Length: 273
Image (cartoon, rainbow, N blue to C red; front, side, top):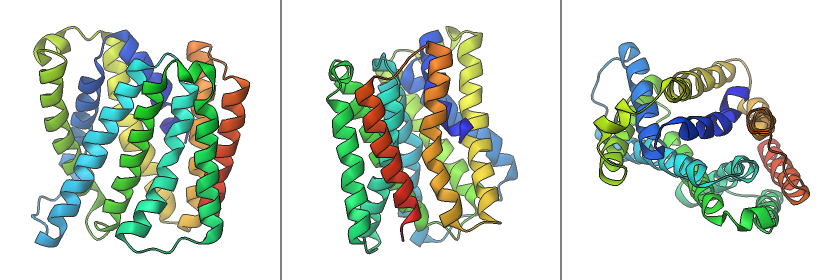
C-alpha cells in the first residue's frame, strides 16, 4: 500500500521535473511490458478472451494512466486527487452488478452512496473548486480502474503476467501515439527528460506497477480476498503522508472530513459481503 500510495506524489514530482503526462503513462506501460515479457509464454488465447483482453488493456493500460497523469499535471494540490482515487472500488462494485449481474446488498448501496457523498463534500472545498478539472479527471480514472477490474474477472483463467504484459504493450503504443499528437515530437520530449524524470518513470513502472501488485498477488495465495482487500484503504493514507513530506501540503479540514468518510466507506465496502 505504501508503493501504491506513492504513485500520486512521486508522479507529480516526475511531471514537475521534466516529463509530460501522456508520455509519462506511455513510458510507464513500456517498462511494465519490458519487465514482464521475458517471463511470459507467448500463446494466442481463446477467442472468448479477445474482447475482455482489449477492454482490460484499454481501460487499465490507456485510460487509467491518461486520466491519472493529466489529473496530476493540472492539479496543484494532491490530497483530493489521492482520496478521489478510492472511488474505483464503488465504481467496480456498481459495474460488476451491471456486467456480471452480481447482487449489491442494501448495506453496500448505503456505503457506496456514503463514499460519493464524501467526494461531494471534498468538491465543496474552496481549494478544490479552483482545481475542479483535476478532481473530475481523477474520478474518470477511478471509473476506468473499476471497469478494468470487471474485465479482469473474465481473464482470471489466463496467466496474470501475460495479461499485464499485453496491457503494457497496448497502453504504450496508444499513449505513445497520443503523446506524439498532443504533446509534440516524442523524440524531442524524451531527450528533454532529466535524471529525476527518468527515476520517477522507472519507479512507477518497475516498483509500483510490478512489485506493488506482485506483492498483492502473493498475499492472495495465502489469505482470503476478504482479508487482503480492506488494506487498499491504506494507500491514500500513505499517499497523503508522502505528499506532506515531498510538497509540504497539509489537507484542509473539509478535505480531511470528506477523506475520512470516503476511506471509511471504502474500507467497510471491502469488509461487507
